[in-house]
Amino acid sequence: MDRFSNLRCSLERTDLIYQGPVEPLLPPRRASLPLWLALLLKRQRRANILPPPWLHPESLSLILDIETQNNEYQHAFSPPPPLPGQPSLRDRGKRAVATPRYTPDGGRYFPAPPFLLQNVAQDHVLSGEPPSLPFHWLEVGTMLLDAASDDLVDPDQTRRLLKELREVRTAKIRSGVDVLDAAATGGGGVALTGVGAMEVGEGRGFIAGVVDGLRKIGASKEQARREQLAEDMANGGYDATQDDEDDMEF
Image 1 (cartoon, rainbow, N blue to C red):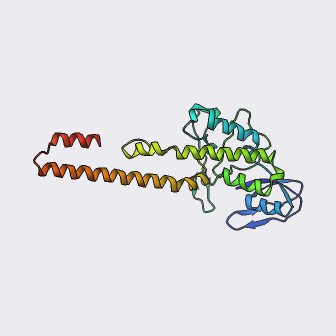
Image 2 (image 1 turned 45 degrees about the vertical axis):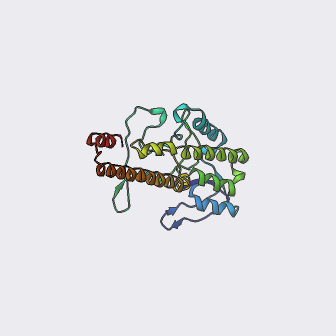
Image 3 (image 1 turned 60 degrees about the vertical axis):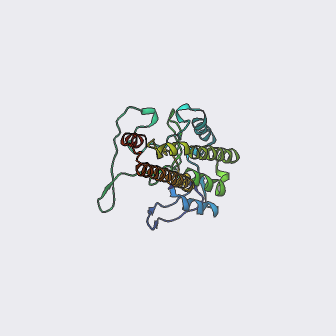
């Protein structure tokens, strides 16, 4: 996860384990660094951190409006950043053209979240491009507010907007219980497109508990139905036509 930093000190080229080389750091030139290294330099007062565009209060306000006031996303989440080669919301209708990348040993792969650079500061943001939350939006926002609040635009408002977004999106995840109940009888599932990593972790226990409870309820209903059929057969009142109708309804 990269971050642009304004440097206050010089550092030679460094090789990081599993993350490759880091270019020489020459202030006041900006440099793209792993988030943990940028936070380390910030705590040592050796760098300033430039926030990504989505962490600005205006962008967070727009995303919150999408989550709460847009009928299209009443029961869904604001769209995530487009994948490499995927058309943005502004360019709907265009064909997706993904560009592969290659590992050091020549293996081809297509990057996807969470292995995308979605938290890099930008000097120029395309006009008309709607803001979007990256996969690790909650973790990145919380860490930057804790360690680099003086580098953010209006940190108090940013903290409030992040809290409201978290509450709204958590409520949407919990409201999916009705959909899960329908899914237990052959309905659809819960759409989690745009959900962040921390939200998945927080909702996993709740959703898994609901699904397990619905599964037990369905099993008990099926057991009761089978016992009733066995009792009807023993009493000579078994009707195969009624059984077929029950199976179709189930």
